[in-house]
Length: 355
Image (cartoon, rainbow, N blue to C red; front, side):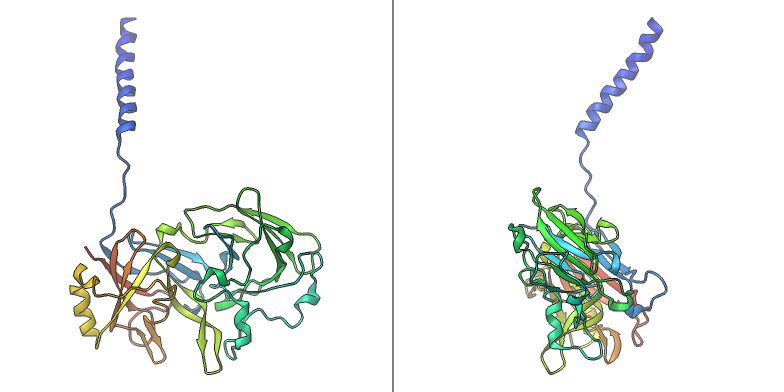
């Protein structure tokens, strides 16, 4: 009995200590990255760099990149207070709203004359309404705000997109309703099908959007909203060749996480040498003289040049303010065009925390 007590008492002491230790251990928060040089992994297989299959999300404070196949999702469901659904602009998905609210009533006849896409060689202003507002204005999505009145939510015909080498997939007809849990009910079917499938999509405040794939259901196709600052990708964009704004597909675009409060300032200099010197000395005092933009495409294509084919522009850098108030300076080193020494689809950037 004495021997048993000698064994059990130390054990109880250890358990008690462990319990106290568990209660008092601090929550470990990873340190904010001071900066890095990082090569984005846009290539998923053997595709060309201009048609890189991945969109790559970059979290500056964690020095972390998250590659996601552009074709891995079809629709994004907004997790904010409004009820909005976005198309996959990285796949160049296009859509049209019909007058009916009956999925069964929609057949192949309703697709006659529709392209729901854009021609890279002859883009037309008439094609622009097929795509969500390029600037990311959520009040101007192709799919209207989802009404609390089911009958008001019309059928949408969706071309899932073939941008940047994505294989053509069957078109889909769909409706989106609000559900009783405060999220969304997606009803969808093939164009000629008479019965539909359903996916329930809940809102999750840690994301900008919850995304779905028609093959996989709900998927995580972007990081949590506080865990990315920039995304590099192929995407439908907007251009003007003289006849008015048209949808036009671009490679190597950079968007900021504008919905989470990320902003960016652009600093342009007379030469690469001047930009390099300014980058090295740029500090918090310099930030005060910087104008910031919250526009989705505030960086866009401005960081690189393909015509003329000189690659990454070395005469500039960008000042990024993330959602938690950290400031970073970021410069693009190479992207695989001209003599910049890089690999297309695997651009290289360097950035530093501005203390």
